[in-house]
Length: 398
Image 1 (spheres, one colour):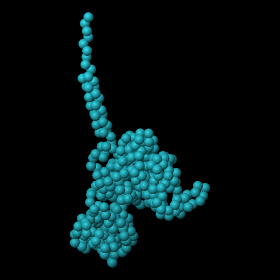
Image 2 (image 1 turned 60 degrees about the vertical axis):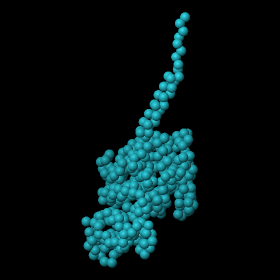
Image 3 (image 1 turned 45 degrees about the vertical axis):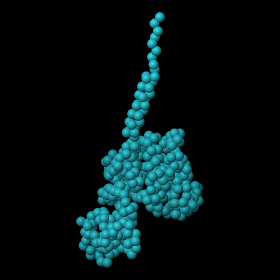
């Protein structure tokens, strides 16, 4: 009788284990490379994301978050629904929210990309109902309410003054209520404050939401092209952002009635907002104490053109400068626009001049180091005095 030889299975077993390990590593590498968030974070670039809060299929709030992971700085641009553009999809001038479609967010996103002059690879859409659920899941959003709101009607509107944590139902009411005599700008500011608070809270709570069941629920509240894993990874970045220093501003323009509706037509055919975005992005990526400071400006009208100082102040505010005062110069016959620098930071004055292409800069103090800045400027009302001359066309010095 012939005996069958025994086959030692140990080497075969080890080979199988090795192959499984290699396949797992290869799959992990492929997954990492195909993860859009990891790709974005691994690159030395600003990450732009679109956030939409919609109510009954219409955008209630639309924001573009721009953040640079390396410096942990971020800025937000609000896109009002009434911004008027030549919309490519319908080939006519209309409100930008006209083309908003829950199922085709890319059409809306593409118009915003064209408006701001940037690519926006990621989008997050929340219905008002889901926003309330998100707020409850992250255990509330804190906002500062400057004055208490006490309105008794069929549905009372009650908000105490001070720092208040809103639950989901209160959050929905906070961003949607309107008062007959309320300044529309205050309603915009209210929503902006809430959005910044939401970003901050999402970052603070993201770590506690990562168990699979909770993360799956959280992910379901957003319409996004990101996977559950990518969404949680992306929201980790919010915990690193300095929200207190984050700027937020709305795209502005001239109100104009077109086809029976009032539209906001972006200044200078949209060129101004693109310039502001470029300047904002530059500020996000540059490190140093100089970039952390908000410079102040005194704007004086040195021409006979009525209202020029106020319009120029609005222009400079869009670039992040704090306008301390506006008024008239000592005479109204300045031929050339003049910048008077009171900081001693020559490069800061030159950067300011580049905004309006003004090279006529008078330095009232010698060039100094950044550490001396706070000591030096006590005697001046503003960091820069801008005297507008006849060579200024309300955007650039000719």
